[in-house]
Length: 430
Ligand SMILES: Cc1ncc(COP(=O)(O)O)c(C=O)c1O
Picture (cartoon, rainbow, N blue to C red):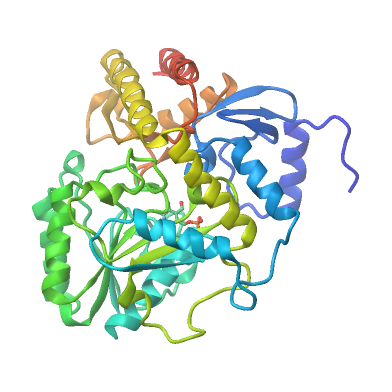
């Protein structure tokens, strides 16, 4: 079809509805023309502040010049060989740098995939190959992707699992600690003990997988004490502890990996999203002996760890060092939390302001009652914000959380502008 000279969002939405399946959701009816830093312009020329960052992909911002230069340079040399056929140095350098950045005083190895779901699939593969066990424990409210195994691990039925089963067997869900909704760390650990009692003996469990901060589930932060008790449980029973850092990783939470704040190290870590700064890339990083368990040819994929994506990820690492983005992640988080807390003081519908580093969220309740999640108001605020030029995302098991994943390169004035728009939306609607 010929491109129309003057594209507009409504006409493009009509074409989208006719040509694409409705299962492919769309949060906002906006079509992008170009983007830079923390700003996006749509096909009608309207400017938006991007507080969604492509769902946590743009910690280094849209089109960071250093990343663009690295990708362009790679494009002039070669774009694809398939790493398992003809290898290239940037893949190895990236693995070396990620191994060095991951917590834990033990030898590590890494390999690459393309999507977050593939990283999780492969974390499960190495854990099963190493332990020679089958069962997996994940958490209610967790999100790990849309492939069959990652849907099985995901702890939220609608919309992610409904209608798509049966899923791979031997996946059990424990409770994720969330004091706001009445689940303590003790309750969460007890729910794992209950799985050992009612469902599967610990000697058959290959791995426990958790997000250090549940992303799609609502930005609930796992307390370090919980991670430490999981570590002890895994050590006791020979279970592999997997941290799914697809959303939390690459500096979002104020450290390169959120699990650095646990005081204990996971055995395997998955990353994706902001690792490639907008170029699709995911990573599996783990204890060398676990990563070496699958036989030759057991791991890999045609496009995985593409040279273009590796060049982008190396640029992301350089940008973090050169621009001190980890420190910036913490100050961005503090500025957002301060602004959101003062908004919550004015609007009791905001029941909680929480976060880790620059991964922050507010949770909305009708009349401030914690038993009445307000998904309708959450959606209304997201849509109103877009009209006023701010891109926001909702999330949460109850659909009542507004999350912020703004690029870490956003200026203070851009952060304040976004907070002001959000405040105006609450003044208008809450
Ligand atoms: C924690 C977590 N794991 C896995 C995934 C799946 O990643 P992808 O959509 O790249 O397959 C996501 C995506 O949001 C995620 O947040």
